[in-house]
Each structure stands twice: as C-alpha cells, then as structure tokens.
Image: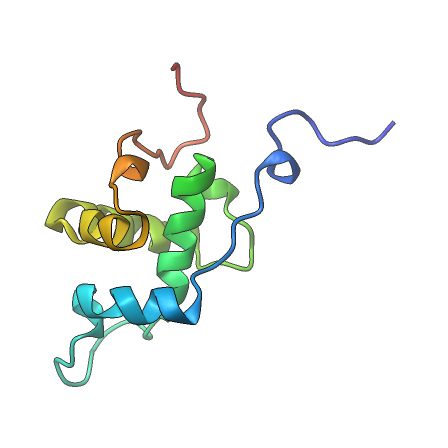
Length: 117
C-alpha cells in the first residue's frame, strides 16, 4: 500500500496566497518595495512570492525544507523571514492582515526536526 506518512506535506492545510487587495495593503510595509534605485548582486526575487512562502510556513508550522516547490527556495524565504522578524516588518504585516501577531508566537524552524510542544 503506497500511502503518505502522517504529517506529510499532503496532510498540511492548503494555504491561499495573498489576494491582490491584501498585497496592496501590506506592500508599503516592505522595505524591499521602496524605490532605492537599481539593485545589485543576486537576481531580483519577487517579494510577493517570498512573502507567500513565508506565510505558508507560518500557517502550516511545517519545516522550511517542506515548502512546496511552487514557492521560492526555502533558504531565500527563511533569510527574508529572519530579516523581517528582526526588523518588526513581519509583525506589522501580521497586524495589517490578521489584526494580531499571534501567528508569530510559535517559532518556525529551518531544520526538519520535530518540536516538542
């Protein structure tokens, strides 16, 4: 019998990406959306897609490595998550979207290990 193990990605809730209305509301909160002229270095990444990736992990509480392939690389999402969390941007986004920052209370991890609750 070929069934998915418990706690596999197939068991995690399906998360909807940000709507256009939600994106318009929070885009001004993201420092990356401010016009600072041309960016150098690595190829630019779609910040909306990065935020959708981060929100998927926060909603599912799944490990970063378990992000579906349709999102950005988990390393990229995690790097932005850490930057936005440290600077308070993620809290501002959570408050704008959900009127609470409770989604940020339980830490997300990059590793595939199981957290004790």
